[in-house]
Length: 273
Image (cartoon, rainbow, N blue to C red; front, top):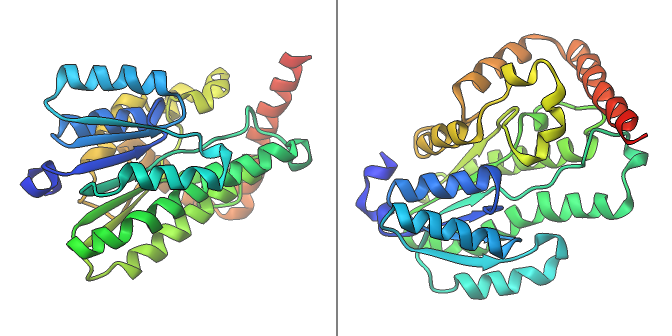
């Protein structure tokens, strides 16, 4: 298994979007398993605090690379320079943004559309492109792409966000085939509701507590699946929910999703008014 392999315990793991939520907990759990960690995220003060937390609990090294992926293509040269020469064995592509609330496409400002594409798609593609050659050369590596179940079928009122996740799903699945025989593996993680800042506004739903997973519990289980499966929801309850969801045909799922997210949109509009 992955974490019982001494070769992996001596190398670095890179986690994007690691100052909060899922990325933060991935970093903590990788460190718990003895891996050194490189934190790549926007808020340096949060990463400094996380580094102190990790180093106080585990005998690992933690490096910080403060980067705002919303700035576009100019950020990748500094990242490449910061990671140059490092023995990176695990890449966790987690960084992502969502709109403040579900909305119709025309209600999304232009700049948010561009940011959604810049942050949800390009970091994953560019970091894989950047680190994959060295992983192949060493014939050892693990790429973990954190996506979402919203990418498995159309989601009205989350059209931009869900479409970026669909891209990540297809990109990862194609990459898995490309990597056969190279010694490098690629895992796709598609969670449902996880208790992070991205979905705080959904906590008003009566079903939220039933469907959501605490972020600490989710990430502990998701990290445990690394090296064991190529595709996962990351959490046992999410696996059951997705199986049940897939039983319903698309012509039933689409109206249900539209009703749910329209309700959330209208409630947000009322609160703002």
